[in-house]
Length: 308
Image 1: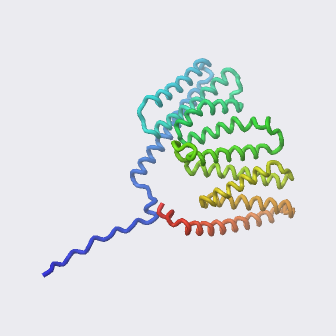
Image 2: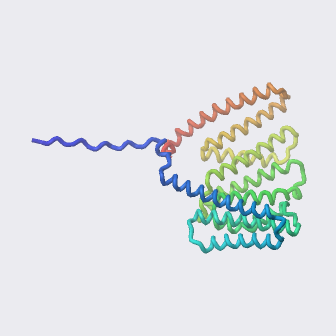
Image 3: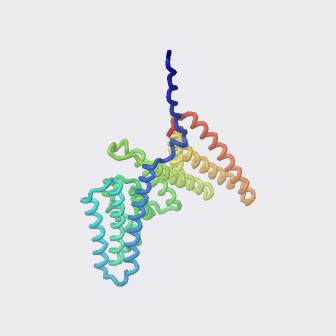
């Protein structure tokens, strides 16, 4: 007589897409550690800066520079000697780079060397360039890009002293950094790949300056740097269609609609407020429909992304 066999154990059901995207306890703990460390370092630097700012008049200029140099030296020794996690070390390097700027600000104010001029930001960026490269920490890279922009871009009016140079210089600058971060893993395999938030930010800035340049051409009848703007727009379209990023596609579409509206206003002399509002609402509806349709099409082409 055969004994009844027990039924096989139920096959575990695969987690849904929503459950797979939820963070577990380990991920939450890592996030809390990173957030608390970042906020703590930021508050520490802010406290030190505000303390000396409050007692600024009572401190001799040599003492001010000595304190700033001592703080920079202490952070440098901590980075070089103390054993720590890579992320913690990168945060310390970030704090050291900020301390470099604090020292130059104090030096500039003590000796009246125009501390608020672009020279300060350019000097600051050049002094921390080696640490930015060594750390390979992209928040620090973003900080370096901003410093270099504040130091380099204001001087370009000496090279291009014509109306409208600001838009073109900003477009070229952001496009160059976007190309650098996008191509760096191919040129330097030892470098980490740039995160999407940095590439997306530079992409949006490049496209924004390009569309702004084209809109300026529409209203001023000036063909200044149109060719450069068209190249930037074409490159943005190529990148978006290649990587199929719906967020960037949305920016492309809204930028194109803004340029189209500028053309309609200029050519048809539609200067009424009601007409402009109707045109903006219509453009928003059309853009939303096209974005939803394109998102569905790209979702069909990449079914494996549903599990990510």
